Image (cartoon, rainbow, N blue to C red; front, side, top):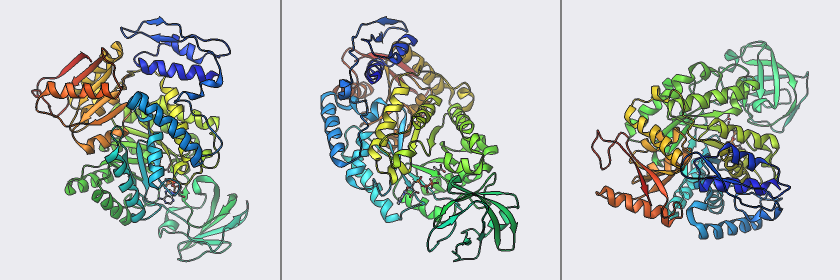
Amino acid sequence: MSQVVATRSIQSSFENPSSTCLHSQFHSLKPSNFASKLLIPRRNGNNCVRVSVSINARRSARAEPEVVPVTPADVPKADDEILNLQERADRSVSMWSKPTVKRKTKIVCTIGPSTNTREMIWKLAEAGMNVARMNMSHGDHASHQKVIDLVKEYNAQSKDNVIAIMLDTKGPEVRSGDLPQPVMLLPGQEFTFTIKRGVGTADCVSVNYDDFVNDVDVGDMLLVDGGMMSLVVKSKTEDSVNCEVVDGGELKSRRHLNVRGKSATLPSITEKDWDDIKFGVDNKVDFYAVSFVKDAAVVHELKNYLKSCGADIHVIPKIESADSIPNLHSIIAASDGAMVARGDLGAELPVEEVPLLQEEIIRLCRSMGKAVIVATNMLESMIVHPTPTRAEVSDIAIAVREGADAVMLSGETAHGKFPLKAVKVMHTVSLRTEATINGGETPLSLGQALKNHMSEMFAFHATMMSNTLGTSLVVFTRTGFMATLLSHYRPSGTIFAFTNEKTVQQRLALYQGVSPIYMQFSDDAEETFADALTLLQEQGMVKKGEQIALVQSGRQPIWRYQSTHNIQVRKV
Ligand SMILES: Nc1ncnc2c1ncn2[C@@H]1O[C@H](COP(=O)(O)OP(=O)(O)OP(=O)(O)O)[C@@H](O)[C@H]1O
Ligand SMILES: CC(=O)C(=O)O
């Protein structure tokens, strides 16, 4: 029943995103076993004016597109029905009804066997995927090439949506070797890991890393599959590590191994990674998620390489290694963002550190004006179940509240049974949570981190102005800089970022609150502004008579002198 009220409150906050005042939040959260009234905030100022909207609290509000009816299976028939509904809704109110436009927090989907077809990429995109991630730990170049081509094909034919492409490197993963059949490990049992190649018996298996014996010490805790099993190191020989099983389980082939509190002394970018990075350059991907980054040097090395190739690809280090924690500030400063890779992070460090580090990494990224992604286990149970656990829903809400640019799905979309439902749940939970967040909570030290002070000042004041007036923001950008800067101030309204560069449009898909739109710029500023506003109006994203805040600032002047920056408020 409360679904009904929640949906209406979300809609009212989109009709007027500026000020989800406390009063309206209260009403939106109220139990709805009675006819409820919503407060729709008025556009001029922060005052809320009571507007009576009687809602009969009935489940029949299912037809509202934002509410995900979590039905029992992600079977094509059900999906088709949902998508048909979506298509009908899209035709009636066009782009503004798209999940990818209304929601501010972006969704990264890992593409794997469950989703690597044309049909599923299209469905994921329409359900709300903003970024397609390819994990280079799995699959080969041919299979990833197919995914890249499909995403590009989707982008080329879509008039009002764009999906960014992220290539996630395998990195220096330490894995156990092949076993002829799974081995059941029982607590108290002895088990050995060896650097000798090709061993796979009931009490000993190979490890793919020659320095394994040197890196571990007696007393260390080895975690298999991120902690599904654990073994304590009892003794070592020249080539083997003898352990006692603490938490048992079924050991299968090629499992992930971590040593609690330690990172492997391997380079963050391996030879395979360089090969994959080159593959990414050839395919003009938008982002590299770089596994097991330990310090800023590796980010500089990759950035220098990309510069030498003339590749415009952004670098997002994955914070997952114990060694990276003392270097967080310098790693993020050198990069274009960070991913909180909670899987390995929670294996190398005690799990109770993960939420604290997540908060800290998000805070650091936001204070430095960098993109931040929260990843792993977000809807893990939906790999096999059609509905999420309440804890998973809360986890997404926390990441949204903490201000992540994006939340990520891994196994849920890569090999899960309900990939579309997982995206829809993530979409709905993000949207619902966003509706309760007051905009314009400016990161305190953003001013110190960014050098281009004038742009920053204009981003800040444009945010304040659009929040006060309850308008969307319109920005014209060739490099994406001003759009990402505005995003970091988290304005309440959508940032409509017009760019004449397809690569910039694609990359901006990751950023919180940014709706990237490709448009040819003309030499005449007024003509371009008029074209942009017409497009927004045609797409149903702004209404005639509505005000928008238009920002002209940034590093590369478009239709202005270098020294002149503007914020204009225009009536459509
Ligand atoms: N391209 C792919 N081909 C085949 N299977 C895949 C692919 N991508 C992902 N998977 C499957 O989905 C699972 C979850 O994906 P995820 O990206 O989380 O990988 P992971 O190996 O579990 O973790 P990590 O992110 O640390 O590499 C993988 O373990 C794998 O079984
Ligand atoms: C995403 C990832 O690699 C992790 O969570 O470990």
